[in-house]
Length: 259
Image (cartoon, rainbow, N blue to C red; front, side, top):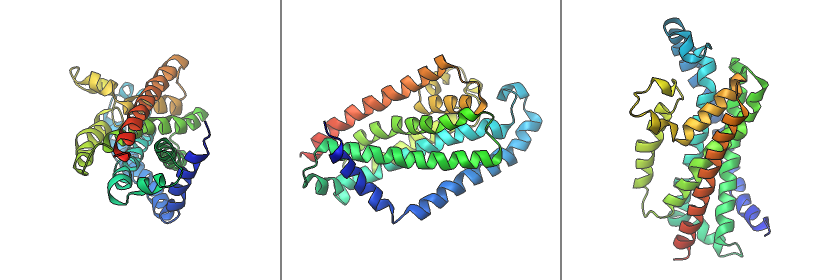
């Protein structure tokens, strides 16, 4: 099967990005700087002073926090790209319908957009890694592998969200996604503190989130203590969610765009 049609779909999203790349690059750089300064250094000075060192694995709060924020930024970027742009492509600007007026198929439209989501998340993650390095947060050269892990974390959210949004008639469910899924996962999936500090009753909920797997592996790679077995388990979980989400999106896109 030729990938050229999907590349043409991807080309639309990259061409459109030329109008907004300056703003997104600026925000992509500014947000990690602000987070790491305010929380890694500011709040971190208090955490380092009063928290038991063993709670953070014997590292400073900045070193602990930075890779978790990197994975969380990937989640947020992928969610943004897979919700309102998908709704717009179907209902508002009808970009997808315009693409389907060409020889492109529904699968080409979907795959091209998912590839763009992956590229956008990789850009955000690479910038974040550069800011982390400037702050001296990484402890191992293995941290470069955190970029593809962050991309995979983002895709584990992007594909099922895109499939879900394709079934909706308004953007109200998107608001609910952010309020009841993204924000709680951002706060309670190990980004800011170890999941082991959560109440035992809700701890399993954190362990099944894609973000916890992304945070755990990014942190392990940044600290240099990732083990092959654990890394393989995290990657397999994220790949499975991405593939399942892509299968759902193929079905919902075909149903919605063929109507």
